[in-house]
Length: 375
Image (tube, rainbow, N blue to C red; front, side):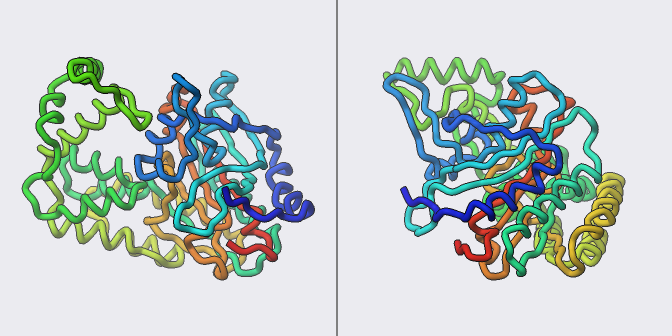
């Protein structure tokens, strides 16, 4: 395993300091995390980047690829509504065919609350990501912003069927899947599904899972790859639903492509969003008004000319459902962000938490933040 070079202790302290000053409680997270859960959050494409661990006869686990999910699980186990947690420690992602470190240090802050999300909360975390990343000494940083919720509001402004709009929102944070939807534009139906998916589509998920288990038992096979029958059945049912759904028209697809291609100063970017939007825009108006508040707050802490907005900003995990954040270094480029983060309210419900809980956080790579560091 390739290990990231050590970062000087004073640099680590400087990067951590803004998070601690914000009132975060220092916390660690279990090194091993459930493989099934991580695959469900990031998709099968992430499997190759996870270090999988399995005891004889036990469930498959993986070394934590980041801290967010692990800390969210810990917070829910405590039964609390509110919490602020600061962390600093190693994370692990395999990188075959690359010289990138596979063990690396992350420093971050996760904030949980039962209060409704606000522009102030989002701007605070984005500002802290900037402050922590800047503490490493680099002078070539820029703050990049995106918003999964803005994509959903834009989709709602278009004349789309409910099923098609729902499917597009579901893949908003997964560029490969969104590109596949756009590539199918003009078709009368999505060419997907299959006979097994079609058989399962008329059943409830428990019934579909039971049928799969029966088929496996008759065939004498065992599932592999960390997926159970319930998860596989759910995915097959969704695949069957997609098979009978209408695809985008060419005009609709072109509007979405233009929206995702926006990459500009925040003011110019939001003007382009309004130009591209369809006729049903109440949700979009509300989303843009919220951004007006966020930007007014961020402009008090971010140097002029250092903010950009692009709707296509996404991360490896698809649990982000609101603002997304990256701090980039001009020297390192967009593929090696110094900091990432965003809002992930829906993750807590997916982990079994209450539906009224909300979360936002960010993570910094101290080695990349350090002016003496490289990739």
